[in-house]
Length: 197
Image (cartoon, rainbow, N blue to C red):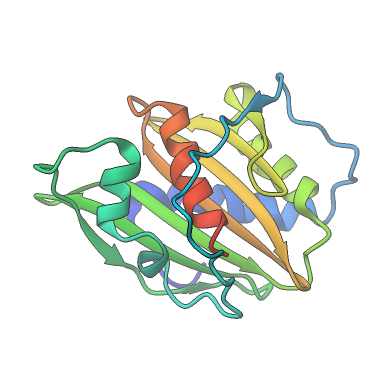
């Protein structure tokens, strides 16, 4: 992959990137196992104008600061997290991944990866099929989140991944947390980011 991502999140991202490469060879008929899980409706926001989607993604941490992670996961005013942006990971097929890890006291249990996949806007289903394959029998499709989404368990981590087209690009959001964190909370985080990109 060229640039190292955190060891905790690197395995998930590596498997997913490998799945993306394989997805271009997979027919669109591939289905994830298990029933679809319906994401809860977003909590209505106060009367604010819609966020303009950026033409370029330059930082994962700017799209999801540590304070937002605390709020979305249900932390208290005493909760403390620090965000750390990792170097961008540019793959040989032109995909660019930006990763932000969150933690404190030397531990980083939460991670956000945002991928920009050029010329892949029409591959939302195939891309999520590949990610679902990474999750094996734990993979559950999520309806109502982006163009397509999936949740799965990988080792001690729960992962939610969603994709949305932007022009000719497909933009992907992956958020991972320890399995003790409920899937609904990860969906809330993924929705917060996917709505911005």
